[in-house]
Amino acid sequence: MTVGMINANPVVHERPERASHPHAADVLDPLDVFGGLSWCGASDTVRDIKDPEHPYSLEQLSVLSEESVSVDETLGRIQITFTPTVQHCSMATVIGLCLRLKLMQNFPPHFKVDIKVAPGSLANEESVNKQLNDKERVAAALENPNLRQLVDECLCFNDPYSR
View 1 (tube, one colour):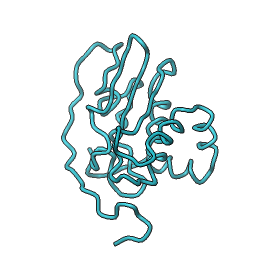
View 2 (view 1 turned 45 degrees about the horizontal axis):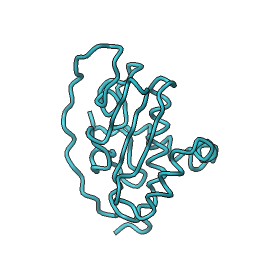
View 3 (view 1 turned 180 degrees about the vertical axis):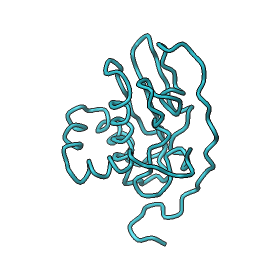
View 4 (view 1 turned 120 degrees about the vertical axis):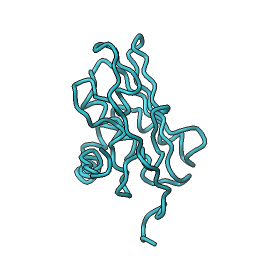
């Protein structure tokens, strides 16, 4: 058992193959956000974010799925609800920061982004949700060099089995 990990032996799921899906180029949908080609043409979207504690993607750990992403073009809103692997996940805030930063990097700035923990999946759910959706707290967190390095490592994940 690895010392310091909250969930030392997570359940790892196989990543399904995903083909790009045809749709109007000017319409953003949940698959674009989750794992299709991003708005700017990049192929790395939220499904490819690495878990902060494990060498697996958030999708492989079932922290995130296509169903956990919603897009409302009319309101200009992207909402992601993620499910930590354990009730006392100490990395939930880091996961949320990774999701927010990935969306900021890959999608138009006019979208309002809401990142939330799935109801009942985390002991301090309300506190984490408040922190992840407060612009000033997010900006301050991303100014912390150690935290920013951890987030960047999760976003630059190149799992040879993920593609």
